[in-house]
Figure 1 (cartoon, rainbow, N blue to C red):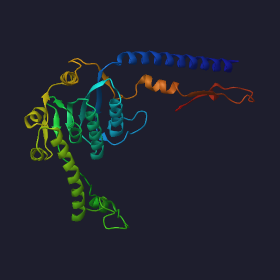
Figure 2 (figure 1 turned 180 degrees about the vertical axis):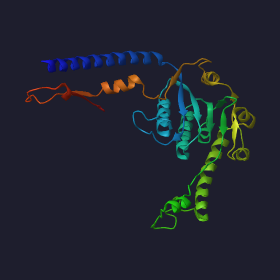
Figure 3 (figure 1 turned 120 degrees about the horizontal axis):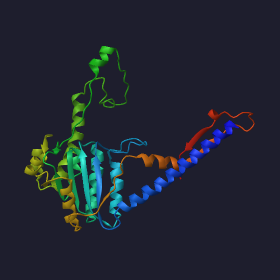
Figure 4 (figure 1 turned 45 degrees about the vertical axis):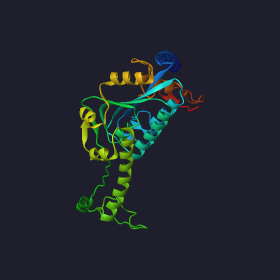
Length: 315
């Protein structure tokens, strides 16, 4: 009898928990919908952290600034008639060359739809992060923003001395002279250095072309700045890399005026934040909840044999 009371108590707790999650989810959805503009608005896309090609995956993984996620948001923006302007909220040290080129190309498509773009620089907007800002009609930076660092870098570790010290000897069999290029057990040959340098020059030329196309600078002027050095926001104004000094509020005012929505436009953030408490609970509540009991043929029921299993559903 005592065991059956345990089971009943567990079932009641599960029912109450599920009800609380559902009610909370309905309230949360209602608040979110109320806060989301339904009319003409400015789209905001966050580019925070390292720029990568793909989402890292996983419930608790930090999304960062993946091209996969950002391009998906930009495509939605292009397909939304009520978007009248785009603000890029950038705080990133840069990242992968391919990822930045993909984002840059998609931003050109947004611009081709007649949607004005303002890039706002927070603490940092360097290297690839500056690359993707070049289609912007206006770049707004704080005076102390770190920007620039225009260039391409490749790093190949040489662990030959370490391997010798700990007794590791690599035995490499290849089908071609350069197949084991960039492996860390030996230094690069001069021919291998030149191969890497040639690839770097192609990426660097593309970077320079993007800046010259988007900024009031000639190619020669860009190359003078593109030695890898960093600039403050104030120095960026002086050399043509930045248009205005200000904070995020100033950037919003600028994109509002460019879009014709005034200096206090409605904003919609198209970039999802990390999963919160309700996201996790709602994810669990949307799964299949099974209560597994012991076999009915057993004479006694031990409460420790009762367990809850939650299976997530993708349908």
